[in-house]
Amino acid sequence: MLKYMLIYIVSVFIASVSQIILKTSSGKAYDSFIKEYLNPRVIIAYGLFFLTTFISLYAYKVIPLSMGPILESTGYIWVAVLSFIILGEKISPRKLMGLLIIIAGIVVYSI
Image 1 (cartoon, rainbow, N blue to C red):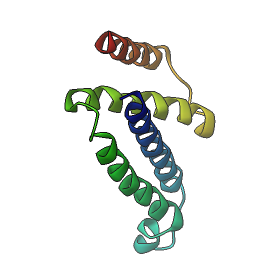
Image 2 (image 1 turned 90 degrees about the vertical axis):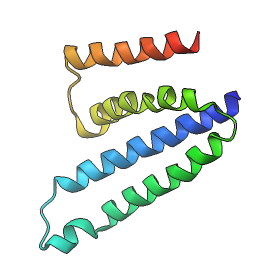
Image 3 (image 1 turned 60 degrees about the horizontal axis):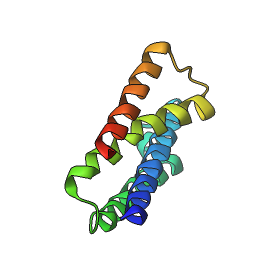
Image 4 (image 1 turned 30 degrees about the vertical axis):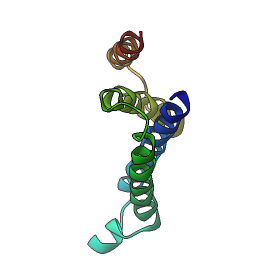
């Protein structure tokens, strides 16, 4: 089961990366409305979202449904860390406290 949990967490990580790609794409100016939504970054990001759907379905063959939302909550951690590393966003004390509560919840559920 640990293997499938790791597969699910990788799926959540890929979804988090795609969120970062979408955010970097939204910060650019485009010539037209169509180019805003049909550019390589947006297409790749939504392609990654589509891929994570199949990875998650594969992992759910073994993972109990009650564990899915718990593992999915790691996405908040991934997005915060990736935003800090790639986008240079700061992690405020309030945001850090929220992340620590999420981590505590994951630990409590896994015990």
